[in-house]
Image (cartoon, rainbow, N blue to C red; front, top):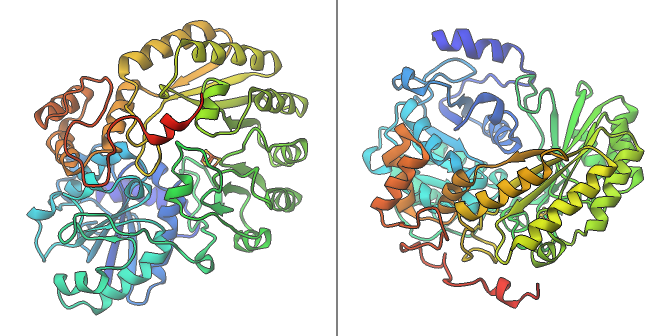
Length: 506
Ligand code: SF4
């Protein structure tokens, strides 16, 4: 209770939109990371509201604290400080593959045995959902009773109904078995068809606004789900299902009058037909704007002016590959010309800079591609201040790159070093660690064995312990050329070069 009083209650006091509800069926919705990260997740917020809208169900939130060891199985919920593990359903929403060990920690801190086989019917049902499960549910199979895959909006009413009706754990499983999006690892080996929410359940929008979110005081509303573009590395078009655009007025209807900062969420907002309309309406009301993603080929001065009026100071675009031939290889459809045009727009309208995100370590990449990246960044920097975010490419399931190898830590570090050396005085550089990207590449394509490897090290996680645990299960790739060498769940792996990569002219 001390932690609740000293840490959670002050956060609670600054929230707008918290739901306080008492009901016979208690759901804990946990986020396996800090409060500020979880509160910036729109999916987490939607599931929180939807469970609380269900008759007979009350949902409270819990987050992984900074020093989990000191909680000894008594993690308090935010709303009332009750034990998070004292509930009928313990639901975890997880966005990132590297939160795999944090999921295990969250269960442990909440006083629940992380392994499904070590829990019994007196324990809460553990459900894991969120983008990670659509990307690759298999490493979660040792821990979850239910893995929810796809649009959560479609699944919450089904789960709530089963919680109300079931007389036993098996009865509960019987009621939800076979529903699209419901993966029961105790009963099935393969992931099911994903859940797809009908248009009536969209758009997603925030429930709680707080200054202590990573998106401080921002009310989020989802303009579009999915993406019709063909970029081969990206999960947006597969993971978020068919592209569904919401109407401009539908979004405006969801935004409360008190919102002073609004974030439009979508895969490619400069493609979304109503961004300008919604942006203009909001800026006329004096609302500040945030946008999740803009494509350099579809941004224009009019859109940039609206964003500027909405208080945006830096423009952010994704280049995604270091050279034009590799952007073609990814079917990204952005040219160096598009990036230069965007830099000009950003400068002409007085934006303080341009952030460009890109990946390196792509299949056919060589030193010439990195040379091109360095040269065009120098060109961009002559126009406006440039911040360059460089991430190692991590091949994902459900993309044509699934069977491509990870480029290798040494190769990526060598290229990062060169970029840093040659652009040190030209651009502000932000790199993602090559070694952690290597771990992500394994979790993104591994099976239950990878979940068990994470379980063996979650109390003492480091690159060294990951290497040791992976060695023990036979994943001897020593940071390099991460072709999976253990048996993965059926249908996951097509060995060799992906058919997409083979067929493309680069
Ligand atoms: S990279 Fe952007 S434009 Fe391409 S599919 Fe993904 S979200 Fe759509």
